[in-house]
Image 1 (spheres, helix red, strand yellow):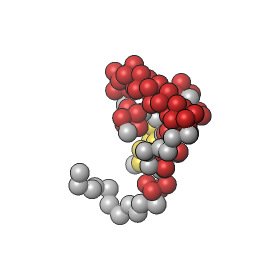
Image 2: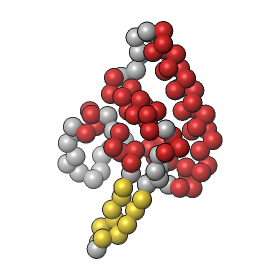
Image 3: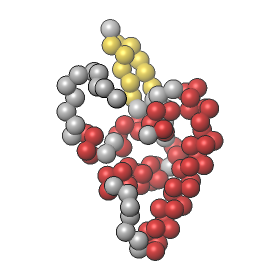
Image 4: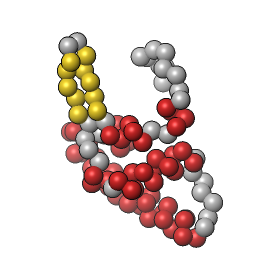
Length: 100
């Protein structure tokens, strides 16, 4: 989630990059070890699939979010959004605001 939020803001990403990389590598090593041992994962399956996709792509190959204006609209391309868990893709968006 932190990586997803940092992808929206280049300054934030630069500030967090070293720590994000460190945590990514820690999680990747732990996951590989779990898989080697044949351990049942404690992670939600769709979250695990997202992380495996990120591992397959590689953190260094993740593109930053891009923005452009088209008329009154600001469009955004964010590669990381393609990895969203299926439960999030099925969620129905009815408003632009949701209470936290």
